[in-house]
Length: 400
Image (cartoon, rainbow, N blue to C red; front, side, top):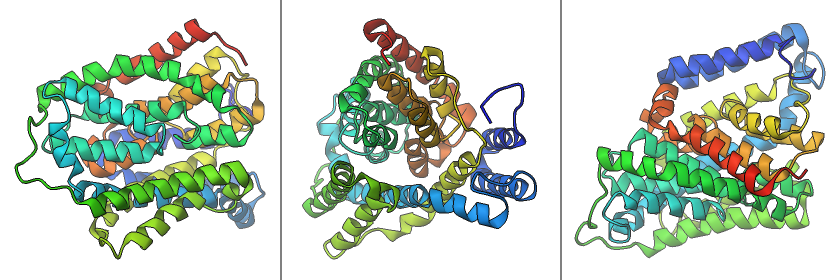
């Protein structure tokens, strides 16, 4: 069944109702997402069946197919929460006021750093590291609009790199040239220029950056080494598997396993702070429920590949998991892949649960789990998305 308005399946209405309930009852997002997933599963068991077949057998086959993705997300989000605490306790964030400008430009520079490191790290890790630094240099008072900008910077920085985002890695594995994905940085760079300044100004008015690090702050080299070890393990697992055994990524949650193996190996040097896991797991389970519900939607094809379709996918990615959207686009073909990478990568920044980076960051800042507050405070993100897309179209044209 195609994704068309004349005949919208009941499951899509149910998914829309879940998103509306999350927007209205943002204090109960976990309950809403789990109840919504259960309702969709019950409906498909009783009425429509699953792509793999009817009944419990079809359900089992479906989630066996999704198991690797869900396990990877679970291990990455919880593992990077442990990473964030190691990074915070290394005291690197505490010395950042000595390295960043004392004015509102400090906020712009920090967003720029997040953008750059996201090109080499997973965008989830970049968002968490950026949020950890922001919480320190802004003394715990981070504006929701600036949090939206941190997510946008991490997603923009990852959109042009085949190791910066799960969706771009999917394109690489499918045979798309990394140079084709690299073109997304034209749009991402323009988008960054649009959102970074208003976000930094909003943060400066809300809470200026610390001028100096606290006296006596000392770096803890072991904690830095552990954070670097975890990140290098994740990158190495992703890159080596993609280059030499891409099929393993469909069968084993390799990147997530690499993160947790690194955490375990480094534990004798500095014990991880396990106390942060309960809160991290709540946000993680919420995302997994939402991704699972999205995977059950009866969308077998996207509209024909075109400039309007690519633009639309960015807005859809804000409310719908971008991984199945990317998989459908790859299967369908006909896209200029730089546009697709930018759209599905950056588009999720428009709402806090539109990307895994947003969910990871709101694990650190639960007050940002409000669609209304995110849209109101981060109003410049949708504008930046459209501006970047149009700039790319004007400079590069559409070349599928």
